[in-house]
Amino acid sequence: MESAGVPEASARRWCSAVADMEVPYGDALMLPFWAGAARKELRVQRCLACGAHQFYPRPFCLACGSDSVTWVASSGKATVYSLTTIHRAVAPEWTPPYVVALVDLDEGTRLTTVIVGDAPCAIGDRVRLAWREREGLPPLPVFEKEG
Ligand code: ZN
Image 1 (cartoon, rainbow, N blue to C red):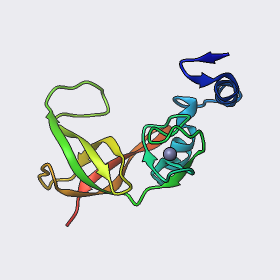
Image 2: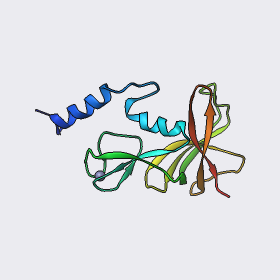
Image 3: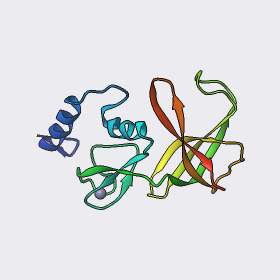
Image 4: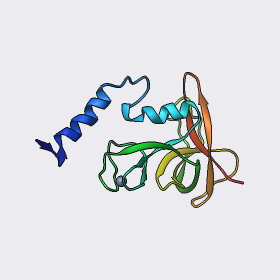
């Protein structure tokens, strides 16, 4: 039996793996990401079949459809794709104004993040990984302007 073009065995293998995991924080597919973040290592998925990187995580490769995906450490270097300044408080831990950005990691995948630091940042600027500590939670990957 197939569902949406996914062979049943493949779908069941993924569902079983997720169902068997303990999820102390967030989504089961994100566990390797948060385990890396706890050590201040930014992880993204890499396809073992075609080498493409992707984030957020999926149980298969978006480029070739293979379910042979693993996690690798990112260089933490990126280019700002887009950004906006938030002027309204939406969460108590974020005091406006602050900059939310989409950054293109050098590995070739895009990540939503926050730009920190005093240097003004613009589309096309190079940024590097930093970490924002949080009480009782893994640190969040944020970025700061290079140079
Ligand atoms: Zn692939």
